[in-house]
Length: 90
Image (cartoon, rainbow, N blue to C red; front, top):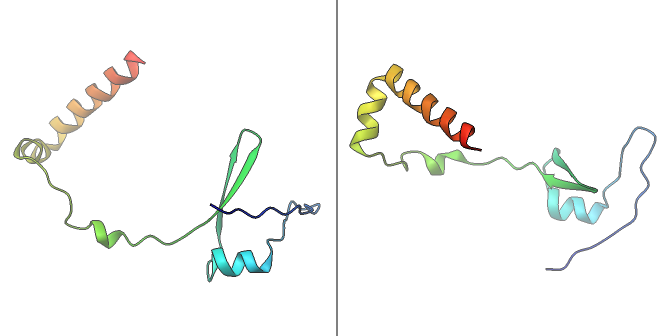
């Protein structure tokens, strides 16, 4: 994987200018980025729109889950108990 590196100045307002060829190649028509701060590193990732329609009707449930979901109050109680017990173990 080839990577490019450039040293850029950060202005008093915290702005950094991305090179034009990087913007054209990586951002295209996207005008928002996600900035992730990790220990000593800033990652800039294009914020892409995700087409969620590919996941429509793709979930499969077993009969037991469908029955539990029919009684939502009971499902919430059981789910809450499992979540609580898992957090307690950690």
